[in-house]
Length: 293
Length: 300
Image (cartoon, rainbow over the protein chains, first blue to last red):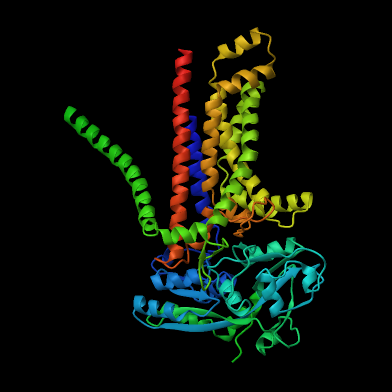
């Protein structure tokens, strides 16, 4: 009897956990859910964790401007979003990396039309350290050595005598892919990189860890310091709107919307709206950089 | 009228048996599915990649995928060991206290409260360990890594205490009064009676509680995903971050290419977990059933 009770408690725990994990995620719907909206099919968006905040703010503003539309934004990682787009479970994928050729081919096959790629913002990938860390600048080569485990102490890169504590992202993340490609030059991460779920978790961890170093979208940088980065033989550049816009900050990237060309109007309308000056102003407000024409 | 009642009886019996079968069939199908996805990789080549790769590295999305399960199995074991080392003594001592020493009124409070602990969602526990516990431990002991086996194992231990406690407590309470009275009659103190008479008499229940807690520990996902640091390091140190089987499945299943070796590796991990928890749970149930039989025999 008692055993039955504890077993049911465990099952309950499990199901609650699932509920919290699903519901407590970054899903946010329109403020009101009047019955009149019920027959309006919601626009579903999924993908990059880096872009979740951006997608949500855009969705909120869009729903305010277009009464009766419902836009749902979810995270999960760029790869997860793209996989969902291919499987047809979402209307639009947000991605912080370019879609690969084979993914485009698969999506074309599955959705019956080409995939439209719309860059909607610029983002700088920041390398974050604790605010008390004396290290001000790093070269890309140094960051690479740090994340490949060739360097294990801060004093090897001009800091105090303290071990380096590495934080990174799960392999489903577009940020992970971008970092691996542009910083590690497609090499492997050191095994002792602690992988956390989302940039916010990395910022939180680095904010509490005086020997920590992490990377992620610059929009999340609060209570940590983004280090000035220098490419080979160049001056170190701190991430800012000006340095990202003129291309001098070496780790900047585009953020994309992906949807199929035969998508219904609710999808294309939203994607086009995201490029209007009004929406681009939101991009700046969230902490990313508007596209430079 | 009689006929109507008969019909209703038959119908209801049908509904119940269908519900019963559905539950059984679901479990069977889940097992079948997991096993089916795994069976394709059960060959020498993949087993070598999983277990004998040197150096043992888990880098499934690298240009040359490296799929050694060694660091991940090691991580699972480390978390389980720390969790058990915390939960077993605490759970058993709490059970001894509430069954042997606590005044009846207090006991009425302790028992449901600890059992309630089992109802705390593991994400909440994981979140607590990630934000609060990790900082405490680091401030206290000066750990290099905030998220490590000690932190994750302790948080896991919190989740295991109610399992150890409830089953041990049931076992201790079921020890016949005559044992205690005989012990007191021989001049033993309360502590001596509890420690040397009651606890050994309830040993099978205590053992069963350990086995069931072990099964839960191995399969627990959310706490370790959040509090373990998720770094697949091959190290025996409890101060390093760890990555467990279940957390790896949770983190990577979302994006894995269906049919790839990485996909197969994740399913292989799932099968491994399934087998481990199946064996440990069956063992626990078997011991409990035997113990109940014995105790019933003794009191009769």
